[in-house]
Image (cartoon, rainbow, N blue to C red):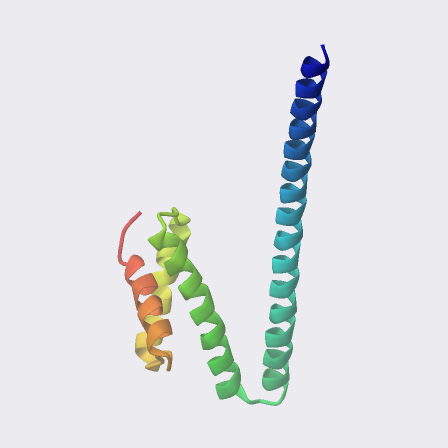
Length: 130
Protein backbone atom coordinates (compact mmCIF):
# COMPACT_ATOMS: atom_id res chain seq x y z
CA UNK A 1 0.00 0.00 0.00
CA UNK A 2 2.87 2.32 0.80
CA UNK A 3 4.32 1.80 -2.70
CA UNK A 4 0.99 2.71 -4.33
CA UNK A 5 0.79 5.87 -2.19
CA UNK A 6 4.32 6.83 -3.17
CA UNK A 7 3.60 6.26 -6.87
CA UNK A 8 0.36 8.23 -6.62
CA UNK A 9 2.16 11.08 -4.88
CA UNK A 10 4.85 11.11 -7.58
CA UNK A 11 2.22 11.12 -10.33
CA UNK A 12 0.27 13.93 -8.70
CA UNK A 13 3.44 15.94 -8.15
CA UNK A 14 4.44 15.39 -11.78
CA UNK A 15 1.01 16.43 -13.05
CA UNK A 16 1.07 19.50 -10.82
CA UNK A 17 4.50 20.38 -12.21
CA UNK A 18 3.27 20.00 -15.78
CA UNK A 19 0.21 22.14 -15.05
CA UNK A 20 2.27 24.85 -13.37
CA UNK A 21 4.82 24.73 -16.17
CA UNK A 22 2.10 25.13 -18.79
CA UNK A 23 0.55 27.99 -16.83
CA UNK A 24 3.93 29.72 -16.53
CA UNK A 25 4.62 29.25 -20.24
CA UNK A 26 1.28 30.80 -21.18
CA UNK A 27 1.84 33.71 -18.79
CA UNK A 28 5.35 34.24 -20.14
CA UNK A 29 4.02 34.13 -23.71
CA UNK A 30 1.43 36.79 -22.89
CA UNK A 31 4.05 38.89 -21.12
CA UNK A 32 6.35 38.69 -24.14
CA UNK A 33 3.50 39.61 -26.48
CA UNK A 34 2.59 42.55 -24.26
CA UNK A 35 6.20 43.70 -24.20
CA UNK A 36 6.41 43.45 -27.98
CA UNK A 37 3.23 45.47 -28.41
CA UNK A 38 4.46 48.12 -25.98
CA UNK A 39 7.84 48.33 -27.71
CA UNK A 40 6.10 48.70 -31.06
CA UNK A 41 3.87 51.47 -29.71
CA UNK A 42 6.90 53.27 -28.26
CA UNK A 43 8.72 53.04 -31.60
CA UNK A 44 5.63 54.34 -33.42
CA UNK A 45 5.42 57.22 -30.96
CA UNK A 46 9.04 58.18 -31.59
CA UNK A 47 8.78 58.01 -35.39
CA UNK A 48 5.42 59.73 -35.64
CA UNK A 49 6.50 62.53 -33.30
CA UNK A 50 9.54 63.14 -35.47
CA UNK A 51 7.37 63.06 -38.61
CA UNK A 52 5.05 65.68 -37.19
CA UNK A 53 8.04 67.82 -36.24
CA UNK A 54 9.39 67.61 -39.82
CA UNK A 55 5.99 68.39 -41.34
CA UNK A 56 5.39 71.33 -39.01
CA UNK A 57 8.85 72.68 -39.88
CA UNK A 58 8.20 72.33 -43.64
CA UNK A 59 10.99 69.74 -43.88
CA UNK A 60 9.06 67.61 -46.34
CA UNK A 61 12.08 65.82 -47.78
CA UNK A 62 13.12 64.64 -44.31
CA UNK A 63 9.53 63.60 -43.53
CA UNK A 64 9.36 61.68 -46.81
CA UNK A 65 12.67 59.95 -46.06
CA UNK A 66 11.44 58.90 -42.63
CA UNK A 67 8.18 57.60 -44.11
CA UNK A 68 10.16 55.62 -46.70
CA UNK A 69 12.25 54.04 -43.94
CA UNK A 70 9.11 53.22 -41.96
CA UNK A 71 7.61 51.69 -45.10
CA UNK A 72 10.79 49.63 -45.56
CA UNK A 73 10.11 48.10 -42.15
CA UNK A 74 6.58 47.12 -43.15
CA UNK A 75 7.84 45.64 -46.43
CA UNK A 76 10.55 43.62 -44.69
CA UNK A 77 7.90 42.25 -42.31
CA UNK A 78 5.60 41.34 -45.21
CA UNK A 79 8.50 39.60 -46.95
CA UNK A 80 9.32 37.61 -43.80
CA UNK A 81 5.74 36.44 -43.27
CA UNK A 82 5.18 35.67 -46.96
CA UNK A 83 8.45 33.68 -47.04
CA UNK A 84 7.07 31.53 -44.23
CA UNK A 85 3.88 30.85 -46.17
CA UNK A 86 1.51 33.36 -44.60
CA UNK A 87 -1.42 34.44 -46.76
CA UNK A 88 -1.62 38.13 -47.52
CA UNK A 89 -4.80 40.16 -47.50
CA UNK A 90 -5.91 40.56 -51.14
CA UNK A 91 -5.79 44.37 -50.78
CA UNK A 92 -2.11 44.11 -49.86
CA UNK A 93 -1.21 43.09 -53.42
CA UNK A 94 -2.65 46.34 -54.83
CA UNK A 95 -0.88 48.34 -52.13
CA UNK A 96 2.42 46.66 -52.98
CA UNK A 97 1.93 47.57 -56.65
CA UNK A 98 1.22 51.17 -55.63
CA UNK A 99 4.38 51.32 -53.50
CA UNK A 100 6.44 49.92 -56.38
CA UNK A 101 5.09 52.61 -58.73
CA UNK A 102 5.74 55.37 -56.19
CA UNK A 103 9.27 54.17 -55.59
CA UNK A 104 10.01 53.90 -59.29
CA UNK A 105 8.90 57.54 -59.72
CA UNK A 106 10.89 58.79 -56.73
CA UNK A 107 13.98 56.64 -57.26
CA UNK A 108 14.11 55.74 -53.57
CA UNK A 109 16.02 52.59 -52.66
CA UNK A 110 17.03 51.48 -49.15
CA UNK A 111 20.71 52.11 -48.43
CA UNK A 112 21.21 48.74 -46.71
CA UNK A 113 21.63 45.88 -49.20
CA UNK A 114 19.84 43.34 -46.98
CA UNK A 115 16.87 45.64 -46.48
CA UNK A 116 16.82 46.48 -50.19
CA UNK A 117 16.73 42.77 -51.06
CA UNK A 118 13.83 42.04 -48.67
CA UNK A 119 11.96 45.12 -49.88
CA UNK A 120 12.37 44.03 -53.50
CA UNK A 121 11.05 40.54 -52.70
CA UNK A 122 8.01 42.09 -51.01
CA UNK A 123 7.36 44.42 -53.94
CA UNK A 124 7.56 41.51 -56.38
CA UNK A 125 4.68 39.93 -54.45
CA UNK A 126 2.55 42.81 -55.66
CA UNK A 127 2.86 41.51 -59.19
CA UNK A 128 1.00 38.33 -58.21
CA UNK A 129 -2.73 38.51 -58.71
CA UNK A 130 -4.65 37.03 -55.75
